[in-house]
Length: 218
Length: 218
Image (cartoon, rainbow over all chains, first blue to last red; front, side, top):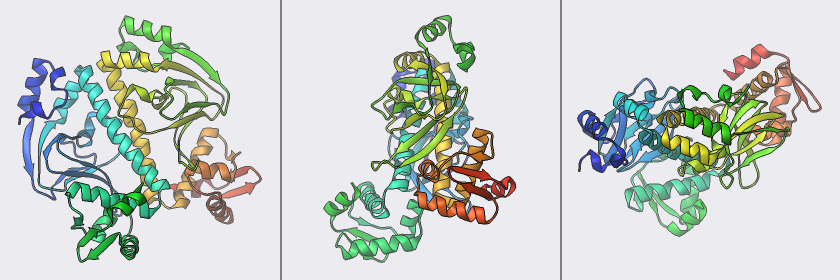
């Protein structure tokens, strides 16, 4: 599939704009674990995900992480081109969480398109509003939702992404995603286990009562 | 001063667009305490603040508040027109925190302008990126900054907004702004008082050591 299958407003572009995109976009395959974008100093360009999974997270001065959102096939990562807008004053790190394939549209090219085309600018607005909504959701979770509910929601999302009820994930990794300490995760998982909702083994968490986990996460 | 003095990209509009704005925008004076916008069901329009101060906050199911940002003269409130973009999936409440004057641009009119003009669409992008940056800052504060630092930063911001070192504010109100309990605020303010950074009186907090508060907030 070509770029036209992944760029959502292809039909709203002029012939010249299409040619500019086709000539400048680069397709890249990246193995799991690749750091694709590292804060605002770095302005690679817009990523359009063809396959795989990216993770966007923020990083504290002490190296603590919180996962902000995931990007799957057909999603677009705007903040890897954050230099196209001066007003973006925050730093997001993006890594490939699975082996992934993506189109990269150079930041300069996208900026030029956006400045000249109301369609592209409005589409960019929509992308930003989507990510903004995800961040607001996360903030409300962090402020107001108890940790057991957040952890249940996290396990269910992972299970959905991996299409499996057996998750190969360490307590440490879960803590990183959720911006908390490993001990807090371990304590809650043990409580979930005592309630029959999960079964724990080294490096694995098996979800054994999806119904109760869903009720808890609601 | 007319709308042209408050609409930042007036010079990038066509004559028709200017006329549309001038004919549809309404100037309104609102007393302190007025609820201007109440979540996504409500789509009044874009607010351009002429004078005064608005506060945007989120509200939990249990009625807890957290202040997200403030809007001062010349600031623009985009989320009071959140219906112009389907992708905005969160609810923000906006109230006048001081007696205020504002222009209101009807949501439909702004949407039409945005769809037809790359300049307006890109300006909207910039507005959203600014608010997004404020929210990301707040989230990092909540996740990673200890409460004493957050409280010091809050008192300094209030002092800046009120242009006074004596703040007429209750502990309860501070707790609402910061999304925490009154007891937590009272305890920390008493600690600040014991350290000589503030002096407490009924309904007042006086900042008595700005230098130390600034160091703490950094």
